[in-house]
Amino acid sequence: MTAVSAAGFSVATLFRMELPGEDAPAAERGAVTDIAVRALAPQRASVKAARDFAQDTLASWGAAPLSDDLSLVVSELVTNALCHGVGGGPAAGADADSDAGPAGHPVQLALLRKGARVMCAVQDPGAGLPAPQDLGDGAETGRGLHIVECFSSSWGWFPLTGMPGRTGKVVWAMFQIPGQ
Image 1 (cartoon, helix red, strand yellow):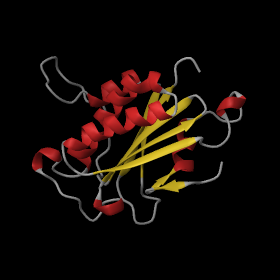
Image 2 (cartoon, one colour):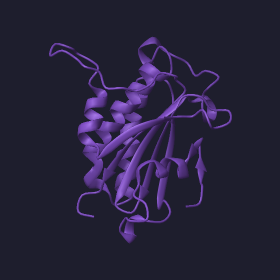
Image 3 (cartoon, one colour):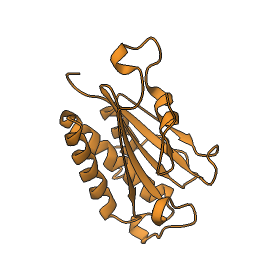
């Protein structure tokens, strides 16, 4: 696969994480066919902007059947990035910091398509590690990664320690386009 970079994302690194290898059906081997990247400001409105971006992108790729599930996961991942990865989160009115991406945006969303699979990946500058929480029935927050796990075919994360000028992590989730 040719390494393509967009807004700090190494597409080759992202797709090497989970997509099938040589034993995969021919339609799932080869290069990424589509990529869309959006920088997000550290504010509440970015969650809706990310959801809208995901829905519009999927529609343009002919992958609208994924829209509900992927949009829900994007909402959870972007909310986590803003609350835990930016420092203070949108509720605290956090501003972009030195780890910010393009044009001062510390959070980035990438959607990548390869055959019948779509990956959403959210990059943030935070050092905290994503891990599902064990919560009681009365907890009002903390279920985001459980939702990601339920609605995606797989998910994971990796640190950006090997990328010059980048800190933080990328949290990704993989989806299969229904009927393909």
